[in-house]
Length: 65
Image (cartoon, rainbow, N blue to C red; front, top):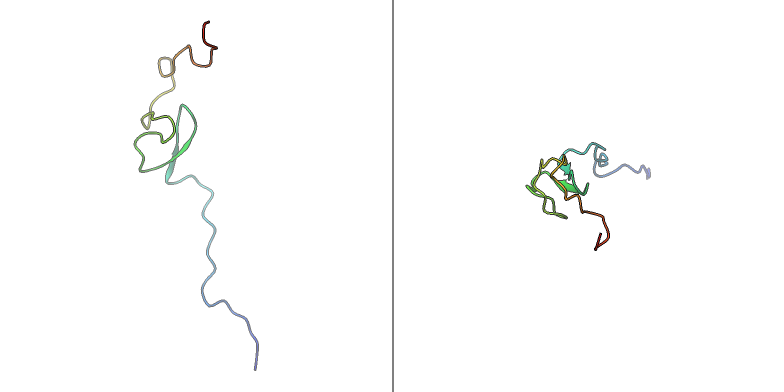
């Protein structure tokens, strides 16, 4: 008998490297699903700008300064 090995099902195509279906948080850069209306890590709403006023100027400073 011929022992030809053929796949019984088609090989899966690798997922495209594009970020379709995701959005990056503009504050913490976490990659959220497209369905999320706010960041799963920092609760910032989708599309929130990081321009002045978006983040406290005290952020990152040691306490007491």
